[in-house]
Length: 67
Length: 440
Image 1 (cartoon, rainbow over the protein chains, first blue to last red):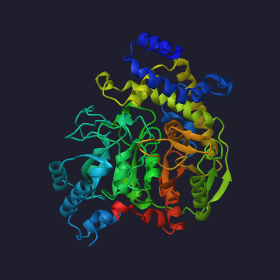
Image 2 (image 1 turned 60 degrees about the vertical axis):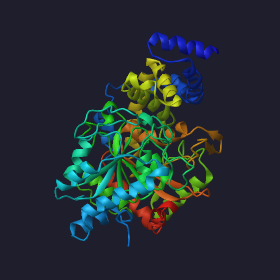
Image 3 (image 1 turned 30 degrees about the horizontal axis):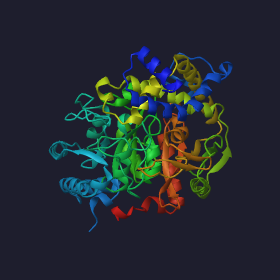
Image 4 (image 1 turned 180 degrees about the vertical axis):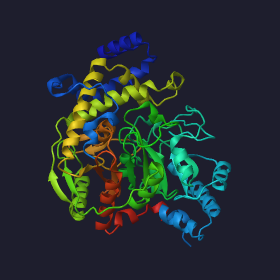
């Protein structure tokens, strides 16, 4: 079993997420496809990214201002 | 004699209002058309003639009086809870907000459309009912997740369908099936009885053959008039990076030509942090969708859907916080952009619909699984809540349709339809008038 699968299986077990071994093969492919783009978030420049409590985009007055 | 489902939605409504088309005969003809054409397409997963006839009998006078429609399997009906692309009735049977709006407009719900399983994919391939098939070439994908809705409209099984869009799910299949696919502004109509009530990204949407039909359907959904305006003076912001990069050459040319032929004033617009919209959206959307999946469904899902759910479950919480910060910035970036232009524009899909059996996009950078390139093109509208539309703008050398995407500020669905109508007129309506061979 690859290092990725061992780590993924451990993390899923810790999180209590049910899976079987065949899922790990697909998970590895999904991660290979998405992880390069997703990991860009880890390097995002936080100084330029405001923290706003609201998640609902409808509560964002800045978006409404465009209409 | 013309089959009534070959008529536009608005003409069906007009003829019924004039007493020139019997809505009972229209209902029967529609059910027969679905029965006749659905086999290879897997577009419609359920019809319910008895309930449809009861709905017609009680239909009030309204803009869609007696007009048949289908719905994506994300909206509950009084006689059928939503299944969300599974074998199970996951939602309670109820008069969902979308159902109520359509019922009150006089419409008749005749069927429920196939969709990508749990809405977690952009091809329409994963479904317990079988992959939805593109009417322009049944060996190819429809797009998703509103796969059956787009296919049913393209195949003229129905003139209008209501889909849903959490990450491009009305626009992406609209583009691949050659129909108009429109996502409404977040929160623009009641979300009860809708899977989107679990999501800050989702909005219902209209799928129709052209902008005028989409307008009529949208007026019913939004319960307000959307008067047509003059699109001649609209300023279009063309966002080259990242949305016109790594695009199939035929798709890029058709989209570019459509904007030019429509005569819009164009200017390049930069959207800082747009390249982070897809990962930020995927992190939050994955968490929102994953949290709503009941455990008993997991064992029945397509392996890729399971893989996506597990990948979502493994995302660090810190990424979710970063994703929300990207989202906050993008709201402001988009608002700033709309201070200088009226619409944003780029291709709906990076490449035409891939084959069902080997769903890979052929991009200038090489072959790619569809979800990441598709979501890159579509998710800005979801992460900021703004409305968007895909408009047919031509056909690829493969014979498959091409769509151009337009985005507008919050609440400006009418502006999108004005622009879409102008594009249709500029092309002498040849793209929207075209019908696939099986619908000819």
